[in-house]
Amino acid sequence: MQREQWGSRAGFILAAVGSAVGLGNIWRFPYMAYENGGGAFFIPYLFAMLTAGIPFMIMEFGLGKKLRGSSPVVFSKLNTKFEWLGWFQVLIAATIGIYYVAVIGWAISYFGFSFGQDWGTDTNAFFFADYLKLGENSPTNLGDWQWHIAIPMIIAWAITFAAVFRGVKGGIEKASKIMMPLLFIMVLLLIGRVVMLPGALDGLNYLFSPDFSKLTDASVWSAAYGQIFFTLSVGFAIMLAYSSYLPEKSDVNNNALMTVLINCGFSIVAGVLIFSILGYMAAEQSKGITDVVSGGVGLAFVTLPAAINLLPIPYILGPLFFLALVVAGLSSHISIIEAVTSSIMDKLNVTRQKAAIAVCGVGFVVSMAFATNGGLLLLDLVDYFVNNVALLTSCLLELIVVGWLVKLSDIRQYVNRVSEFNVGQWMEICIRFISPIMLAVILVKNLIDTFN
Ligand code: PHE
Ligand code: NA
Image 1 (cartoon, rainbow, N blue to C red):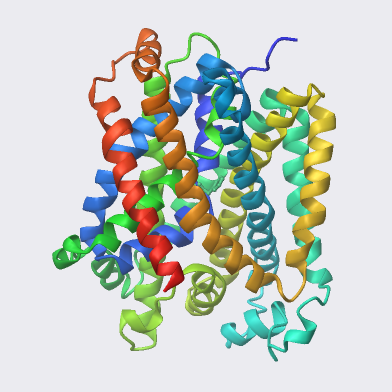
Image 2 (tube, rainbow, N blue to C red; image 1 turned 90 degrees about the horizontal axis):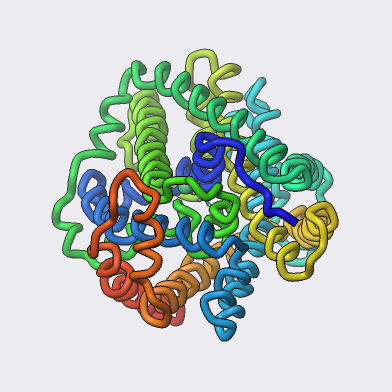
């Protein structure tokens, strides 16, 4: 049977950008930038983008397109000894897919609350006690089932399932063509309103004013590299699967460059959005900006709802923000589930429909562990392990296999054959030396931190 193909170049780029642009851009990036030296973070971030992000994306697009398969197929075609690395990546993708959907579920709930700011004034108590039911924090009730969390998660699974079930062109590409323009329009509308608020500029000043002393801090560089791999969805089966549906004539180098630049540009735009809001909030409450900033889950579900309470027309800006979060998350979730589904299809020779039912069915059941009031604790645990250990290990192994154990120059020649511009030798230097060395250092550092 002929492999499915993307219908157009724009369709492929929107799908790849849909995967890359996700929850990570909206709440992770702004906080990382702020924490790691503000404006000075952009130096390590851009360095990581150039030395790791772009070469890695070109390499994955090239491998997927050339070898026409999902991650286990790609690695086994490189050398049958490496097929396990493909499955390891699929396992990571599946794990991310199972907890990522919980955060999307929360965002769907909050989209509902945002029309009337149902979270009230104490958004912290609302999130932890009323929504997640962690109020008493009694360990005995951690397994209690929560329908109000399960139902939005079921909605998220249904949308992902519909896209993956219908296939590359009729499902994923179509969904991306609706979701991505919608996301960009929503974010632009939000920005257009919030940058004019009093205090917004103070927020931006905070985000962008560089603290150059942080540049000598190894953890800042580590944060930048970690963020680049996560944000670009490279190293765990996703971009390999997406690029395996590229038509013969597609320009890999150009597509990879577009995907990376759009994603990283979006992150900066999201940073402007979030910090304008935080600056306004600080001004309204006559506090310093450091007193209102928080990271991770707390930023999206505690701080921003409190900020939305203070905004003009909160019943419009609130739903816009949470719908943007939902759309960004869903398009990434679709890519994660596609990576798993395509691997099952390729290796077990089953139809897409059967594979999609099996993957979404099992994924759905396992993910329901997050619809209990132990969900947040479990999520923190899994998220920490995946981001700090599994993901970096997988990227490092992939760089070693592709950079050292097969002929990397063949891949470079292959991608240069149909391209408007050629990638030079620098790509091989980045893939063989710079990126793996940086990753190895970060990984060792994370492992030491974990056990300390
Ligand atoms: N790149 C996505 C983000 O920034 C995260 C993601 C992780 C997407 C894993 C797909 C797979 O949020
Ligand atoms: Na991203």
